[in-house]
Image (cartoon, rainbow, N blue to C red; front, side):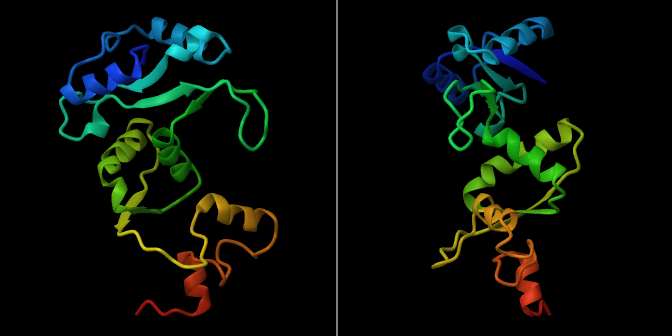
Length: 183
């Protein structure tokens, strides 16, 4: 399902484009665990390694060619300022897990993520998570409207709005509460 890889980034990118398997693709579980422990500590050797999904290097979809799932990052966290953790999941790993666990029913994604949809679904299926339905839309720029889930969460957590269904929010629930009729 996954393996640890220390292939330099430029070489890894070239191998993925040329559909060449990594030399570590057949790595044993024991070796994989040992290398994962390296990225979880502040060891310089751990910075060379990353965790990659073992999916399909022959796929026409480049995002399915053994993507990186975890990397070491020893810098203090940008918001918390702590260095408790040394390894972090990539966006491609975190999103399908968080969306499924948090009860998201429909992930609204712009067309720029079309290539990643198959990977998103693969991660949920492989981990046995509830699958989230993906709805694709073309990017649209809203003037003076915040659409970032991370930034909207701040308003909810700090009590500036009643919740995700607040009529002032640019969410489906908020728009429905505002009185927009779907018929």
